Image (cartoon, helix red, strand yellow):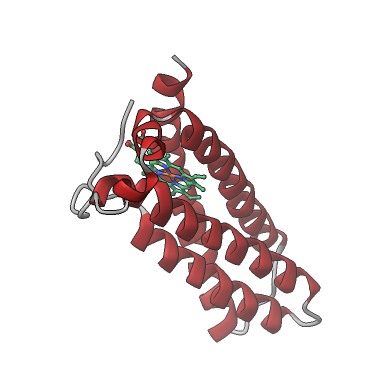
Length: 153
Ligand code: HEM
């Protein structure tokens, strides 16, 4: 029951996270190279991105406990490592996404602390850019080796 709600929510929130991080990265790079002021909107987009990441992390952690895929994996964890799909969700997806969440938070904290607008943009651009990269590589896209639909309702 909870699973049939949280799986589509995790699928949909993925798009909100992707939209937020792309917006944050585009604004950070254009602010950095265009030497623009760091505005309240830049701050809000960074906050939206990290908050959505936290939400997705929370949903992901619950899925990690209740998903039938993970229950199968935990019955024989060693054996699951030789199954591409089980290994992906049991190890690769969670590990990479936790790294992406950390990159997002470090980026936001360092950007907030920076003393100049240029430095704020530069730190956001680099750290959020890395988070975007890690995330794009770890989302199970329809064309990925472990594939999932573009969106699930
Ligand atoms: C933070 C960024 C994350 C993004 C963008 C993301 C994205 C996705 C997507 C698109 C799917 C496929 C959903 C579907 O089948 O329609 C998925 C599945 C899954 N994710 Fe994440 N995820 C993230 C973080 C996490 C984290 C941190 C965990 C674990 C703690 C996690 C656990 C899972 C699990 C267990 C599944 C498979 C559920 C199942 O098919 O039974 N996710 N994720």
